Image (cartoon, rainbow, N blue to C red; front, top):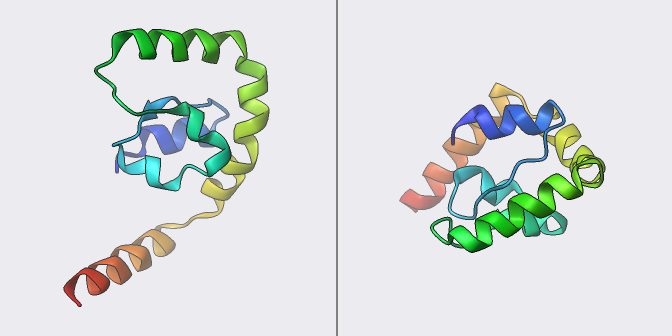
Length: 91
């Protein structure tokens, strides 16, 4: 996945993303509200953006444990996960 969302979260920016984005699979259940099921739904996107803005400080606090987890992941960890998933998919 693109590292822009990963880096934003690590820098303290609570990220609202498509549920189809690669990084979405790392979002913990308590942050599922920040995943857009249908990014083409403009009304849902607007509502989520307003909620994000109105509760920004609360979202920052809620994202902090996730940010800590992401900052602890290394390139070696990511490479190992890719190899493991590729092996699993190959059977």
